[in-house]
Length: 366
Image (tube, rainbow, N blue to C red; front, side, top):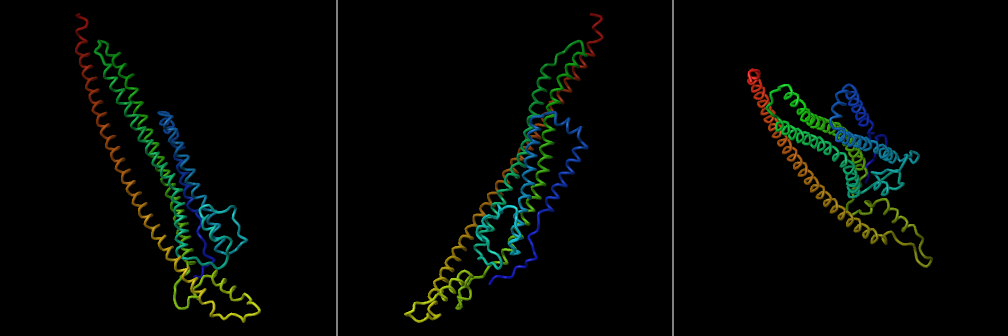
């Protein structure tokens, strides 16, 4: 028998999570306004790649806010259904709860569903919520990738231009022109380092912002899912097969039995006895038990599939972490190589300055 649902308890609104997201974005905008000049200078080091990073960040912000905003009509629909008030209308039909709305229809008041039906509804809603967050997670990883791409791009340009500067050095009697040439040659490596650090900065900062927004969206969806599960668990009807099977029939079967019992008999025959309905009741009970067993098998299969999916997700995350660690090690090795190149360049400049200073006093005698 279905348990009583408290009509005064509602599914909580995700408004608090939306407020957190807006406040966080406001703080980010205020910080960007304070550091406007530095951010603009860093952005101009590589406007193309940095513009792509900002574009991906903007798309991710819009999607994260949309994930929370789309929960409002779902919450309104569930609350109006729980209160069993047909006068509480929502602006549009639910999207995430479309299977549940199609199953329950316009039914109001007392409601009872089976355990298999509840699990089927929750599995469908959970799958839809996970699919909505996949894009935001991908964009977060894409921001990190773009930052690393800019880092390697800048380091490659820095190393190549430093090699060109070292190869162009010549011993000349005029030390001033030599130093001017070195200064002009070092401008390109410094520009490459600007590309590297600016892209890495924007990529990591963007992934941080998008990660926080995705966290808030996930918390809002988890609260909605938990509240919905708590409500549906109060409507589950325990179905068993005791001696008094007629007492455990759902409302639809009870109505069917009552209609059969109330149907008038032919004039030539006496009214049927209530015992004549026993075979019908037994047949319906067997059908109900069969459907319950089939639902249990589907739930077991769904749980097994969910466990396999979670295992695959964990494996994928571990592989991504290993790849990130490898990329960081490669970047550290490249930085050490760049440091050795700069040290050799300093030694070459010092040697050239020493040779120029030693050959300077003999020039008038020649």
